[in-house]
Length: 306
Image (cartoon, rainbow, N blue to C red; front, side, top):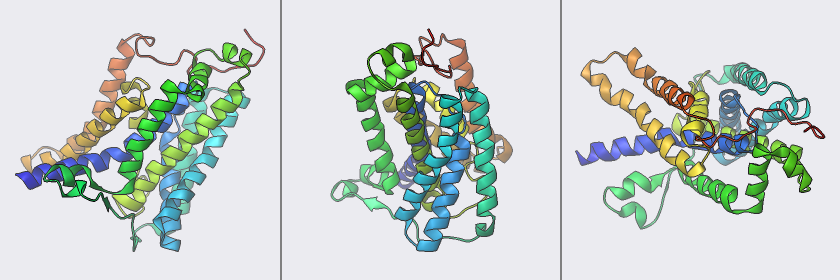
């Protein structure tokens, strides 16, 4: 029984890691006022880039770096269209998803079915990993999990308690007033979109170099859309995102636990997305201000306008 508990808990944390990374990035992006529905495509770009670079070089850290750079670069497209051109952010984000999925499928086609000879190795934390039950559950994971939790804490502290965080939140709440304080709203929003893209690319790298150790087209499997729902679930708070990400990670794991009970595999595969729709439905029923949504989220900003 103890082994089962440990195994389920470990799988939950592993499944929730890419969701947490993506959600942190989306929270940062949306707190600046930019809605990015292209997370799914950006994650796919990160996954295929990390796999190819790791496959060629044998170094998963280079794969991670390349994934973050590639994801940041493709995110600039959304930033340019949404911030500089003031285009519809929903349309731009959806286009980015289709672009990312298309490019990743095309570039990754020759690598389908080719397993990695090396993946991102686990980092057991000395002493802590030896603690019964708790050690194997929390302290015997890949660096992705530790980085995700650390980044969530850093993002939360930065947004809530630093001048940079105030500038980011102000850009999403009242960009006109922010500009009067000498802060370049365009620059803040560009940086947030790029950082969000890098974190989504990092999530994709986790999928291909740590989680599955392979590349298949569509391996993001809707996780980018779950990230959008988790951002709302977390009330745009990176610390709440930790809870939400691992909760949804547990829902992924439940699929495999319930299969021996004779429940339809198709129904089980729907569970994460049913949960996503439920979160969005509940969020739609509540007032957006009570949800703590940025006041100017998805609203274009033009200098000089009132």
